[in-house]
Each structure stands twice: as structure tokens, then as C-alpha cells.
Length: 508
Image (tube, rainbow, N blue to C red; front, side, top):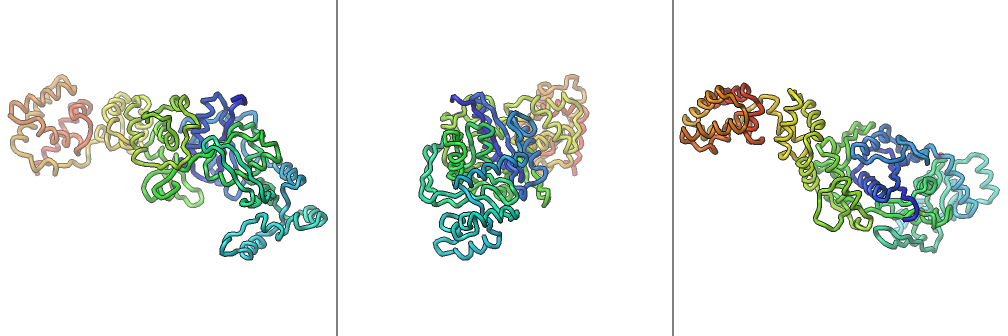
């Protein structure tokens, strides 16, 4: 690649960031890093009617959590700003006017009522949704049907208008997609898209081309839902800058849910997140849960996203970000849709929790315990607890259930699981265990286990029959790490207190 690699992610600040959007960020980021290039974020806020307060900040917070921060953006600066399209407004009209002068675009003065009338008047069984295209434009109120004098008068009077591209009727345009190979389009099937809106703001079609040129973008990667717009963008590159200036394109496959394209509704229906982080709609107050709050590690989230549409052709599934940078290639991105599997996503998270060091888990787990009203006596205790229970945790949130009994006496004890096999021999065993543990000078898991087994042997009882009652006495239920590790960490006083409390309950 001779030209410096420069890629961009260009989100609209209209709400939460869907995992498909984060995957687009990830593939852009990996490609830039692999080729020693630049990754920038450009905010596409040309549609001011859809702007949502807080959405831009949310996007950057998400990228920070994911570890995918850009080199250039509104927040990070750079030499190609402004990085917010609304602040580049002045640059777009000149290009739209240039196209009109060249006969490649035209002014359209149609009112919303006239456009609606067009959709009704030209509706047929074969064409139930008429578009403003080459078959209809000469029947509308625009600079193609008005005289030059009428057009000038309307413009001078400040009449509301848009500028539309004049799509050729019988041309074939094509480009080479880095994932899909050659893609061809017949221009006659595409409508005359609006390039400049009545408020003077560009549409995505004009802005993306002008800005990619201005920001020297070398490769433009986006979702396959933008493929139908490609012929418009190809022609704009050809008309404005020359087709040889166009970035290389790649269109990523859709991420599929249980019934087609993955949507926010799927998450609500099936109980899994589709946004990277919690998003609360400021208008409706509706909360959409995110992977972060669900208990995913950012490393796991990035790992699972990378494999939703790409693989390097091996059996490897666990990748660090550094490994992904090293091994990623656009040639290995699939063209077919990738199905999201929440159970598989949780598997990735479980694997990452298991292999994560205590130090990296400590802040997140500590905050979760505190949020759930659990007081951790010391950092040392917290680190020991994490080490003991992390292999049992699929989500970070599981640490609360899997470790709460270390910090708080269980409110309920599952005596129903013990009572059917509870007898006098077991009662005598635990009475003797209390006496033995009271006298213990060494309080570590190994010593506690040896003493436990020795007393069981003397009383001719199998240790296996006593372990479950002991666990339930300490934990409250049938879960948790090694029971002697639990007792060692709880300490002598708390362990004895819990055994005595449970024995009283078992007498009732």
C-alpha cells in the first residue's frame, strides 16, 4: 500500500452504539494498526432532526471502554478537522453547486405536499412506491422543467429547495469491494438522491464523499446496508474528484439475530444486550442494557465481535487485541451474515475471566460488590476471593452471587437439602468439629481439611456425606469454591458461628 492508510468510523449521534457499529470500529481500528495508519472518528450529524443529546459523548465513552480510541476526532484533535459535520457546513454547498453547473445535479423546489401527491399519482401495482427518478423528474417542479429565468427568480426569492443528483439513465457503474470482489450497478434503477437539504445541510451521500476526500481517507469500511447507495457515491467521486481518488471500499456483512438482522427488539425479546454500554433514551427514558453492565469484560467483547464475520482460518478462538492486530486481514472477512449467539458470547467472557489476572479483575469486582452493599474488609481479602471464585464466573456480575457469603452471613440456609439425611451421628460430628476448630492454632485450608477428615474417620463417617452439610452451613446453598478454602478465608470466629447457627436451624 503506497498511500498512507487512513480509515474512519462515522457514526450519527442518534442513540446507543449497536454491537454492529462497534464491530465496524474494531475492523477499522485493526486495519489501521496493522498497516501503521490512522483511525479517526467523524461525527455525522447532518440530520439535525435525529440528533440526540448525550449520544456523541456515549460513543466516545464506549470506544474508551472497548480500548479502541481513535487517533483523530472531536475529542482527540487532529490536522483534518472539524470532525463534526455540522461544523463543516460551508464546504458542502460549493460542491453541490459545482454539480448543478456541470449538469450532474439540479435544484428541486417541490413542497412536501407535492412530493406526497407524486407518490400517490404515480403509484401502480408494478411500482407501489414511486421514487423521484429519471422516469418522474421531468414531471416535477425543478430546474430541469423550469426555465433558467424561473429558477433564478425562485433562488433569488429564497424559495426552499434541495439539490438532487441527476442519475444517468443507462450507465453501469462498478467498483471492487475488498470483501465481495467486483460489484456492478445499473444507474437507471437508482433514484435522484437529495445531496443538499433545504436547511443547507448535506445528506450523507454528499457529505461522506466530500469529507473522505478532505480527510484523505484511503479505505472506507461500512456495513452492507450501504451497498445500494454505492452507485450514487461512485458517481459523486467521479464527478467531483475523479474516480482514481476514491478510497478502497469494503462492505461488512450483517450481524444476524434469531430472525434476520440483529435489532434492539431482539435483545429485549430474548434477554441479551445488543448495545456496548447501557443507553437511556433521553426522550422516552427507556433503558437498553449494555454488554458492559451485563458483566462482560471489554477484552471478551472485542474478541467475540472480531469473530462475528472474520476468522484467520485456524481453530484459535481466544485473541488479545494485540493478536487481532497482528492477524487481521480484510481478505478473511466473510461476505455472508454472521449469526450472534449469546451463549457463545458468554463462553468468551468466561474464558477471559478465567485467564485474567486478579489485578485486572479487582477494580470491576470491587465496585460491583460495593454497589450490592457488600463491605470488603481489605484489598488482600478481595484478591483472595477473586482468585477462589473467578473460574465459576461467566459474567462479572456472577462474582456477587459467587462471593457474597464471604462478606455477609447468608440470610437463608438451604436446610431442606440437609435435613433428609441429617441424623444423630452427623450432629455429633459437627459438635466435635466445633470443639476441634475452637482449639486450632493453624487456620489454613490444608489443616482444616485434615482435621475434618480425621474426625470423620474416628466417627466412622464418610467425608463426602459431610461436605455438603458443611458447605451449606457456611455458604447457605450448594455452590462456591472449595469448602475449606471458604472456611480459611472466613476465619475461625465466623466459621464457628455459622456452623452453630445452622445446627440450631436443623434441630427445629
